[in-house]
Length: 186
Image 1 (tube, rainbow, N blue to C red):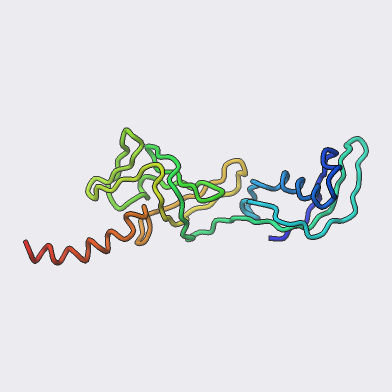
Image 2: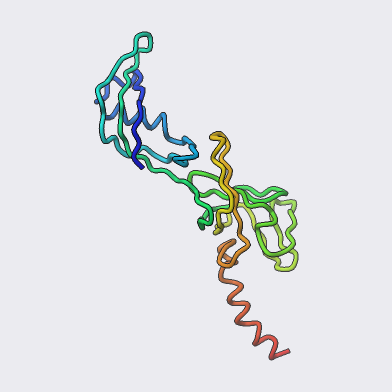
């Protein structure tokens, strides 16, 4: 994404070339920023254009109108994401999806009655599936709220075909293929 904004370059960067000083300042200002229109800023990758600088009396810093390129991530509804389970609670699981975490409510973790185990594990009663910290998963975005920059919220589900703990994703197809043979033997 390309953005144009005013960047404040503090005096500590004055010993650097202008383009380096502006890039450092832009990174300090924008990296990690959460904005409903832009998404989550991951990095300022390049400065494309630097206007004339101005110094404001009493501040000591230089201000530049700058055009720069950003790498951003803006989660979209129905987007399929991959990540690793970061934490398990009695109400669901938190999954790290690169620059941000999403939340999977306990009811959205699997098609089964799910209970919370003492050792921070979600257990499926009938399927015997378990979900624990460190598991690699695939989920779908079902809710996004970037209104509060300090607390972005991304809701996820793993209750659709092809979603869930990566160990589970291919397991149902294998079980379905084996099921008719088991019935014939019985």
